[in-house]
Amino acid sequence: MFLRETKAVQLSLFDILPEAVKPVIELSELFEAYFDCRKTKRNTYNALAFEVDYESNLIALYNEINDGTYQPGKSIAFIVNKPVKREIFAADFRDRVVHHFVINKLNPLFNQHFIFDSYACRMGKGTHLGIQRVNRFIRQCSHNYTMDCYILKLDIQGFFMHINKNILYGRLCKFIQTNYQNPDQTVVLELCRKIIFNDCTKNCVIKGKKKNWQGLPASKSLFHSPENCGLPIGNLTSQIFANYYLNLFDHYIKHDLGIRFYGRYVDDFVLVHPDKEYLKSLIPELTGFLHSRLQLTLHPKKIYFQHYSKGVKFLGAVILPNRIYIADRTKGNFYEAIQRQNVIARRHKPTRDEKAQFLSSMNSYLGIMRHYRTYRLRKGMIFKHLSVWWWNLVYLRGGIAKFAVKG
Image (cartoon, rainbow, N blue to C red):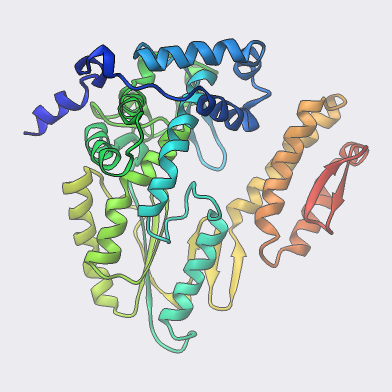
């Protein structure tokens, strides 16, 4: 049965529709996806090349999507080392436009079915809310730190690389057919199929050197993923589809198991409960569900189980009774980011793009840290370590909350 479904979901939906009834997308929606896409990628080489004649390029893409000839292009594969070592596949800009088009269609529907405490890639949520919610879970479960409660934190081994494409697309088909009733439903399904089953490793350009992959576990690389498994980190669709993939798991925990205090950010999730033995007994239950329904495995070395008084590290913060600290790794990454910017300023006068990168990097750390009691930490890091050359070009606003470029 599973093998028959595997072959069925990979059959192009355009192949089984008569020419006269093939649906089309709206050109205006593709333009909207393009403008969404270029907000964050406008200065990349691919984006600039596309933008030179973006109207003609979008019309060509529009025609390819509507006649069923669109195929994903080459990706660029490279390694990043911060915050942890990861393999990234950057899709071609025109493919990113398609990703935004699909997600603009589906995201409002996904959000109606996601639990509240799923924090990743959702408007108005994110790491800060995740940290605050887990802090609230502990406070409520322990009755304001007057009773015992316990924290179980888990994550999934090689999550993105082990997402089963057949399971994902099979569930996605049912979801779209049930919840998305627009005339272009078939086109959206077809684009999802092409995005999910596109094998980036067969059509990519390696950026950097092969030695950059040294030290990266095989479970974190698409080049070593099981057959028909794995979504590329770096694509908008991968992030949203991964969230949808684990939505079944979220509802199992919240509704089938009845766990009130539960939250998840991507594959990092926390359960809080007053019964120590019950919480411990859930580990094999969760393991079995993930394996049987989603073909995923809990990371055996990342099982954290402690009394709430010991605190818990979650999303770059350490949550303890009555206080939340920024984790040491976040402090270290901030320091290293400052040093990287110092190297640029000492070598030459920063370009416009380098100034923009400075603001993006520094303000992202300040944005995270200003939510917590870190004023002295931020002040010390910036005034002790930031090169004087940068102070000729930038200044601080709102105390020590945000950098801006002079002039």
